[in-house]
Image 1 (cartoon, helix red, strand yellow):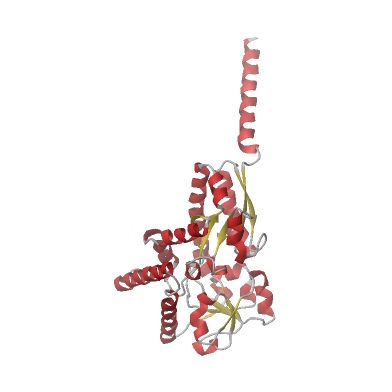
Image 2: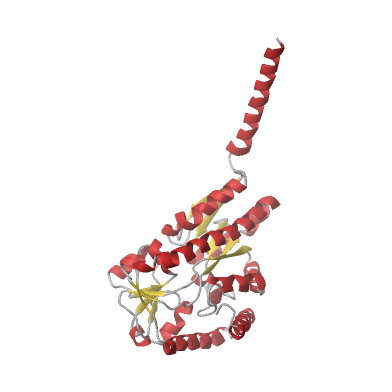
Length: 339
């Protein structure tokens, strides 16, 4: 009889524990986040699905991310207004897509020829005060700034025909943003802006001659190397996006979930950077590479620095940011650290 009682009690305990586990892990999520990133669909399984799985597991199933890639919910250029209005709850945003909305929009994604690599960019954000400036900019607009995500370590030009000197740029139709390729425009390139889902066809049909969007891994993941097989191995910058939340949605989250979002955004940078640095060398064979001469490379840099001075006149926050870039570059160049 005692054995039967013990068995019954043990069974009740096990059932209760299983019920608790189902409540904890099997229940509907408490917070459903409508989320859009600005990258093409090919980026989703590489960068974003691993992050979603990691975050949802870290929250014990309390958060569910409804994941969407470029333009699936709203056009990329409307991401920030849609976020502020609550049409979406969170996004990964590149300010360059709508530069009229925030003070730093033209340089926040990438200052052309600004820093040599992604480690310098991350240090500039995290250790030299630039992140505080960006945070102020977004909070003044009316959205919550979680933090930066550092993507492509190099932004480079790929083309249908080889570019071996500045003279080859004349008349070249390049899909990009003006602020990313201003030095190339100065030497005769023509700026266009084709949506990411149309870039392959635009290259194949000759609507554009090249693009500046990211680096070797990004171009290869999206198969753009098939129609733009020539790589000009000259870094024009490095790609940084920012993770943003609708203010009301963010305030509705418990502090522990807010902390998990902040931590996993940093995890996404590490995850993406390791992929990029691994694939930057592994996938170079997808391209036929060329470089400018030292003299012509210096002309590109000088053109970029002239553009910095032009940008600094746009507003006080931009002027402060440009001076911060100049000071950090001066320090790195004078000490020779990692240059």
